[in-house]
Length: 181
Length: 120
Image (cartoon, rainbow over all chains, first blue to last red):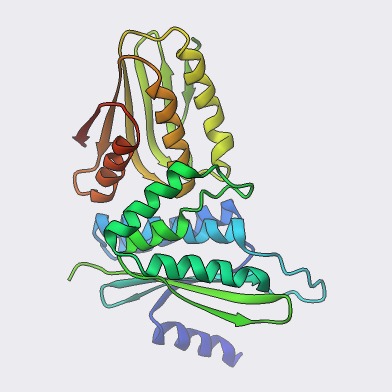
């Protein structure tokens, strides 16, 4: 039973407010959002910070719902994705992790690097280019999620890819929303 | 035109499209699971309305939040309205919600429709 205490200590040490691991659906997205909203309300968080955190959470969660690649390993009962929200001083840290196919790593990395290389005006321009140019993809995304996360958070998007096996990599993504000083 | 009236939910906006009373409004939160499916009847309604519209159409957006997939469909709604003479947009945003104000400004730069901005 020691893992319970260890997990508890890990959460406290990393200032984690909420961790969800497992299946991601629209229903679960709504539940996670409402838990996080209640949590921020109880901490008396300012409404503009709450809105930004909500915004980034939605894009993160819906990204997983739409883009997480199903690991087709039937022997494994490994949950497919993880979502975490933490608070460090005045900053909110929203983290997600999900498997993606190795062949998609470079594409995702390229998009994130491009976004991280842009300033506020550059991101605005990119947002307008994408919204004018895109049809909604088969998966229901508009290709705007990462751009919006970078714009709303006002910070670059930290990421990492860990190779899981010859087919999948684990994609970790972190956004930081700075609270008001 | 038949009135299109959809109650808002925690992930879909409230919609009122009422030609007789001249009320055209989208309000609340928009983060549906399938954005294209949710907005389809709205786009269809506007297409029908454009056949014989009122002299003036003041379309109200009073959104608390919308996700990026919805932003594409909101642009589709605005593009459909662009072809209707006498259309204007009234874009509401909460007084401390700069992001929603900026979103409205960006939409106004993407279509040829006069926008008016108001806080609530």
